[in-house]
Length: 449
Image (cartoon, rainbow, N blue to C red):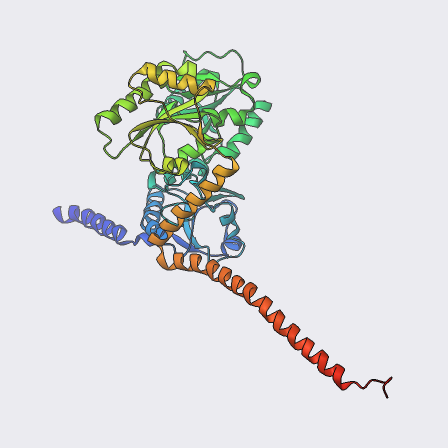
């Protein structure tokens, strides 16, 4: 009896050993241009494009293999692959053109996608049917897996029961829900979902699955659920549905990183941040965080239409914006549409101080710093070039020497050519005059003859 009972255990142990012995690389396929011919229409691919010389790309390899392993273990139908964008510069590599955005800390939010202190890494994309979705966000396992779940499923996820609705509500800080039967509004909602599925989830539901506390004046409607409440889209006051979703797809108060900050720039709202130093638990850090959070909650109806609230750890983005260093912790207001910022005249110690600062920014009585004027752009370009080159020399010294030395060599050659060209012309002119005089002396004068 014990002998027969031990056989299933031994078989299970052997199976577990075989599974654990499978290399992580077995879950990630190396791709090339042939994928365009072999890929089936129903296949969904998550692809990382990389360059062989990129050290950050190499650092992402273990993460990429963990993602492949996790998706396969969960029974996902998404295939995971990677492609050498240098060796495969054919048709498959055209995807890179829409994905050429780097990650990490950036001098300005609008360049958080292009520049990085970790020079060069092309982010992953998902290829579903004939649509390619770039991953826009942190290159972390959690963020990329969530991205896969968003784009690999239906654009609009139906919530067919009260239980499903409550489950979705508990798992999403912000939810956009279309409520009602088919209508032109649903077509517009589907079009926005097609474009913005990389950033947020979209749902549909009937009136019967909503909580009883939700009161809607008319159907169909698009409703956003966030911050413990809800409100509906109104075309007359809110403008286009796409612009409204861009404005409202963030919680009123949240932790902010460079990617979130970049996306907030498209919302048209100002951003009030508590900037924290390395000692996140210090008294001043906690006081600034709680002060900004309290104002965001107590005065949500007053400021939520114009201002996002949050906190940010570190000052990498702000350093690029101010082209210098701020003393942390600090409170700053950002206008990402003009690359400008506002600083309170004095450290806000009370709620009243912070409210006064907010009101003065909104009514235009406090001076903005930075901006996108031509002189500011030139200064920022010089600053960003310096920061990028320093990061490049730290990360890839040989490449940095080449990229800096090659244009300098071309410039030096051009200067040398310009310097030597006049003397060469003078020498040729002297030679021409000498030859002309000699020929004249050799030609006999017919009249004298």
